Length: 495
Image (cartoon, rainbow, N blue to C red):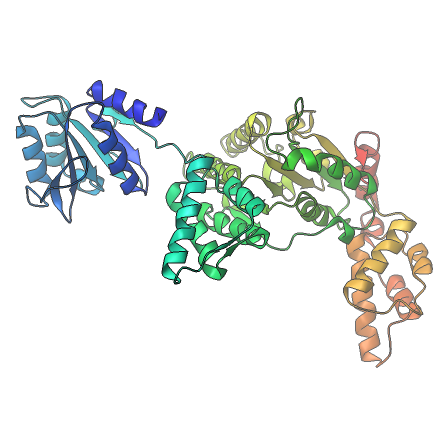
């Protein structure tokens, strides 16, 4: 109701130029028609295909002028009765100086009535000469009741088109679907709901992953986000018992809306660690543990050569992420995106990007859980590491013997290889200093050797592959040890 009252107030104030950006023209027409009950004006709609038409509460008249915008602007100026004029997709024609001058005469009331002109379009970019006169009016996003009503309308439409066959409905799933449609326009939400209903004639929990995918594709028009279809579960991650317990404690608060009194949804974690120790797998497992979509922010695509475009790209990407909430946002190797050792060689761009990201991290209210991974902690800005940016900073160290044995077993089981005849404990002892990724490659190398020898995989082949491999902890021993020396007293061990 406040949306209508706000519009009525603007009309009563005789605001000369309104700008409404929306793809839902029908809703705009309905809203202005409702405003006629509160303020007396003649209501008109113009488009280049239909010309100027008079609208009333429940009908519309034939066009009164040719579709030409110049003739329409003359008619608006000559009208003897105050009116509201909705100009649909008119901005491409305002590149002509004569059209701009004609519209400015109307806006400034030169020998004409105090009309209200509303520029309506999916995207409205006014010429600089007109921008100072414009007031931008945003349509409110539909609430839960409006979305539920829309879902019921689409279910009724399905029944009508399928000979009265009713949609099979899971009430709990419908509530989750409506909750996940929040933050979207009614047009986009209807498109998704119709897809879910018409593909199988049912609404259930099986529709939630498809809903997340469709919602992501609608919102990620810039291409800066990547939807990770293959999340993981903590059962797929070797070790990290302390981190797993931390996430499990926070899962009920993150998924509950609203959260319990006195608690806020968790905001995120930073994962430091040696390369190949499973930080990316943990990020995927956090999303799987929370039961929400995982999206990855590609910082490389944000940067643009034009002034201000990089910051704009970051704002749009984070705004799209918030509309996908609840979700997990993953920034991989964040130190490469936010390194601060370059001084001002980039004109301060990296500092501006860092500043906006830090502000968003501190002030966001949406349920977006940020998981950032880093390998080189020395390159991270100090502002990012202070408490309050992340809920916790975990260090993913090289696995111990028990974790290495678990990793060997996980990779053997994932490839459906029998463990009989393979001494996992001996392999774990021999793999001291190996990361999880290196253990996986040892198994791959041993499999190639077994295939070449037409033999079954056994402990001897795996031992030989271990002896032939130099882990990163040996090749880059000084760097790995320096990272461990820094992180162990300052962070929380994940294992």
